[in-house]
Amino acid sequence: MDVLGVVMAGGRGERIYPLTKDRAKPAVPIGGKYRIIDFVLSNFINSGIYAMYILTQFKSQSLIEHIREAWGFSSVLEDHFVIPVPAQMQMGDDWYQGTADAVYQNLQLIQRADPKIVAVFGADHVYKMNIHQMVEHHRAVGAEATVAVVPVRIEEALSFGVLEVDSSWRIVGFEEKPRQPRAIPNEPEYALASMGNYLFETELLLKTLHDDAGQSTSTHDFGRDIIPSLVAGGRLVYAYDFRKNRIPTPLKGEEASYWRDVGTIDAYYEASMDLRAIDPVFNLYNRSWPIRTVGYGAPPAKFVFDEEGRRGTALNSIVSEGTIISGSLVRGSVISPNVRIHSYCLIEDSVIMNRVVIGRGCRIRRAIVDKNVHVPPGTEIGYNRERDREQFFVTESGIVVIPREEPRAPWPLRTGS
Image (cartoon, rainbow, N blue to C red; front, side, top):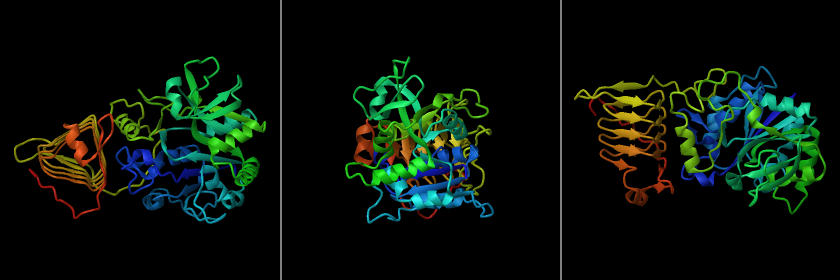
């Protein structure tokens, strides 16, 4: 096997609570019909890498179900698989102690696959990346390990792991959330933030993880421990500039190096809003680099008139299958499958997740409404911050989040309802 993908999908996602109240962060819905993990898995498949282990841990049930429904391969080809791997405590009685420990506890899977290169990628980001181009760069420079990096402004680099490189982009230093980030050579306004995506020569990875496991002072994390130890040991560790990465046919307005760390509610909301425009900076409709997910088997979306002749309308919005909008206006929003929006409603700049029912005469703006929520008729959300805070989670910027509910019996939509 040439390249084996190992996807880190066990994070708690505490900073995007309550969206992670009942699910792992990679399982959080986004873009109407997708989950966050669909982006990294699509990148692997589109790059011609068909062998992936997905390491899960916290609240993984919905994630495992999604992988089974959306990413199952036939067993005809041995080296084509996407397999979720729950934490199994193979090396002791502890849960994963860090990202490196998660891989260490599953070393037998890597040894069994016997790849030339192991691609360890996170499952927490929204982006398109041709991983094959990163592999080519890794080989061209003779790297033993490669870290994908994205330039960020110096003042924004405080919340990232920041790499220091020499003129050849060999990594000479790494610091997690530095107070004074080191700038890129010849680009004094920018620093290099790690994307949490790594390539390793297999033999080096196995040895390094064995050595790290015996270090009582290590946090067993790729960014904090593994990469710095390789750099300090003089190994050939290089940075891969994500700005050079290209998908086959970018569309009008599409940002070539779009990458968003959806690690906070505000970042998640902003990434969702990036999808709405006529020519979005991140385009889900680019058929040269499709984002794959589960097929819901739902009927097409429907827009109907109410009894007074008002037409259900959606402007600058994504509306997923199975949704019915009756006599209401949806503007600048992302609507997931099987949503019901009754008459006299105004939904603006919001994310509405699966099977939400919005009653008659509601006004909702700048909100994230999680799955299965029934919004009572006449409800206003996003118009009075203090009142919203009494009932819901509200970010400092004013984004209202309504946590998911347990499924209920369906609330049928009638014309005029």
